[in-house]
Structures are given as structure tokens and as C-alpha cells.
Image (cartoon, rainbow, N blue to C red):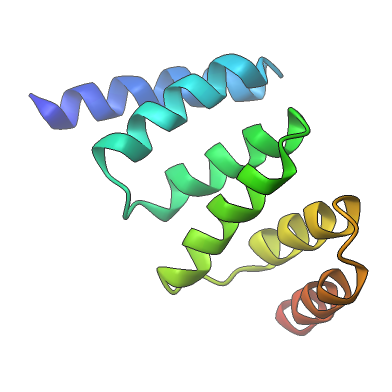
Length: 104
């Protein structure tokens, strides 16, 4: 059953993420996104995994996909602002920090 497989992958991905094993969480969330590219929570955790692995462009792409899906939360705004700042896009980072403050 595909739903059971997705649930198992998500549980493993979250477990690895919470244990700071970001390479493993990247693996599991990447598999989940391949199965369902419209699940913003999986995209967000994949983006966070990329962020902690210093794969900033990949993180920006995942967070951008969340935005394209219509998801806009405080956590997403802060995460996107941080990765944009670290990748050198200070002006856009400021915009997302400001948007995060509006959501707080």
C-alpha cells in the first residue's frame, strides 16, 4: 500500500531529522517528494535537511516549492530568510524576515 510506504518513509525521515542525521533525512524526504511532490510538509523537511547540509540552492528550491503550493508560514519564512542570507541574497532575506514578523 503506497500510503503505508509514505507513512513509513515519513516516520524514518522525521526520526533521522530529529536525531540530526540530515543526510539520512534528506534521503527519506527526497523519496517522499518523488512519490508526492505536492506535499508541502515533506518539501519543507527536505529543504531543512538541505539547509543543515549546506546545500543552500536545493533548500531555496524546496522552500520555493512550498510557496508555489500556497504555503506561507512563520517557520517557512524564517527558514527561507536564513538560507537566503547565508547564500548572500541579503535583500530578499530581509523581505522574508519582515514577512515572518508580520505572521508572528
